[in-house]
Length: 155
Image (cartoon, rainbow, N blue to C red):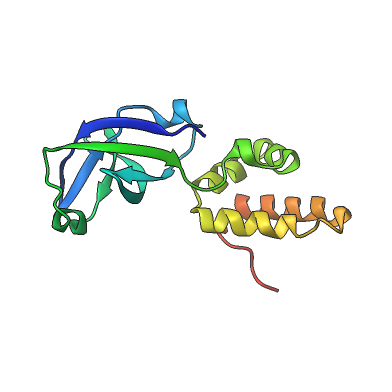
């Protein structure tokens, strides 16, 4: 996925936080999702965040620790963002097709943190030596995602 580089002005985020606006539509640039988990840098320092909407503007919040690092509201910041975790375009064709066939499962998968996404994908990929099981696992993952279950129950 394409990294996005931009410079913007940080704003107060309330409760001792900073809000960093995102000047592009992540749904159009990357892919439509209910929530966009991102990774990148802010003034060269590593960040992980979730793009949200605040007062009609998309952006992400940074906690009070960033203020202790010297960042202040209303200052220019240099930002590099990229989507975090597995993206639909990176998935195996059979998994991507199953998620596309079930919009509810696909939307829930897209909203999960990368830890949960990768756990489901590892479980499916563990069938490399048993291809007959792969379709069953994909169907089970779709069923669990449709039910809103973040993590496969351990058996």
